[in-house]
Length: 85
Image (cartoon, rainbow, N blue to C red; front, side, top):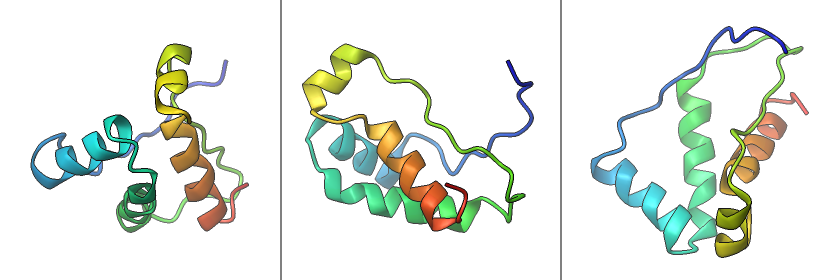
């Protein structure tokens, strides 16, 4: 396993961010994922091209309930946006 080197926090799980995250995760509002990707893009600095972007694993039951893996969708789009995939 590779050592954990860095993580970025884009905001607290409260207020408008809490509302967006809940809509995305629990109300099946997949369209807001681009807002979350954009938030990451404006928060995370330039990172080396050999950086691996990955999602935090989601519980299989939650994937079945939502119909998609919410963290994987964000990670893939962010990596693509940053030309890291």
